[in-house]
Image (cartoon, rainbow, N blue to C red):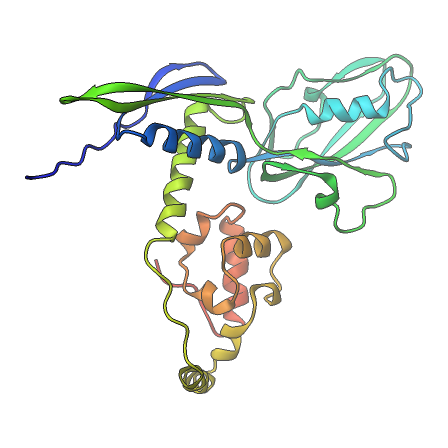
Length: 317
């Protein structure tokens, strides 16, 4: 008897507004609705990059428990308001935004002076009310990241005096829910229909969040197809090392990624992807590396320069 595999449909838009969307995937094999729905929900919540303020420096404010004369809000309240600003950061490098107000005013996010790489999705977000004639100056660092990161992790290095580190919620997702119902496919009535509701903070469209999560899942699964090669025996390793020494690249190939002099962000991204050595890095193509979170064109240039110094290069696309 010939066996026919039924493949699911592409996602279909049920309803979509600026920040909220509902989507359906039909004809999922029995049981796959919950399998796929739970997996996509976890990826959407944890693996989509976003941007947030990670540190703040307010003129003449030594710490977060201080108050500012002429400003109604405490410093703690100002910091909470800053956390509610939703950013779009173009590129991987951290950016500095500045705020300078010199007259009685209701300060909102649109009063920030932004570099070209930074956009604010909710410019009306309230920051502070200045009631007196006071100079209110603030400088903040906006960074790109994943999920939620406590300030203790963000400030592994010492921070300058007067700089206040913040917990960062990078995820652009506010809410994700899914439900599964049975549907008819041919003579069977136990196939699944998956319905997903996604709400974002406005920095990414809901359907884009779903598409990116599906791509992430596919890329993760592709990377684990097949099995690892058997480790070399001591004799094989010795012969391989001798041949490599003659070619002048073995020593470089044995170097760890952490020893290549790459930036901390790039090194972390590579190690989290399981790339531990220069040799392993040289087996990757530039396009494959760009699929990793935190790796862009600038990072590729940095990696190529580091490998070139060891007589190695990325694999051709």
